[in-house]
Length: 308
Image 1 (cartoon, rainbow, N blue to C red):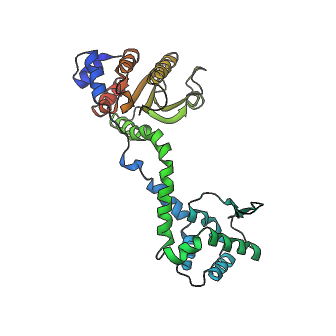
Image 2: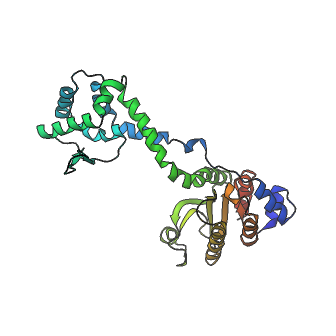
């Protein structure tokens, strides 16, 4: 650990004070406001079917629903790919058991690819709308806009992506911070995000050892092709890997990077580190740079990048 830069940046006098400050400033969430719904993604999904959904709007409140649906399917088969999203399903095909009580448990497969439909296929989709409840939805529940309804469906489906966003939340949070620091410093670094180290060899001509060649990095910062910095980030909530395994893995990463004369910063946070002060001490004693989000906000990351 390079204590001097911590002391100068944070006004702390000793190793123990640095560890204590790190420990006391841990946070219990890394969720920003954009964590909950990816509105641009929702808008994009709606735009994909805007025309088709407006065609289906004509079915709202229909008193002769089956015949109106038949006419639409006959004249506007392009609405077919938009149908699965009405029941919160992705994809262009769907298998359904026609009757659970039937002895044969007959399976029906619906193909929602745009095409001219036969009369038999049209009747199959009329049955689909009836048995899935879509007919009930159009006649009894929806009274304004199918697009508004599908917007709600997309928001609900996007919440399923939160698990992935949660895993990448620290990266998404720190990416603009790193980019801003780089800009304020006059953009000395080329910033690579989620790239394997082999990229350095293939694209920049920087030799990389076989031990890390196929490892993926959260961030790789390159300056003048002779200074390479790997920044790894994570948020430890206390679930999954054991704290000792996490710390050891990043110590090993730094050792592997040193074989290539690359530098390393680990940025971590989360309530999972509370009660793990011994592991935090181990990290500080074995790593050159260990930061949490409080340390980043206090300007320590910027000073490290200035120094490198």
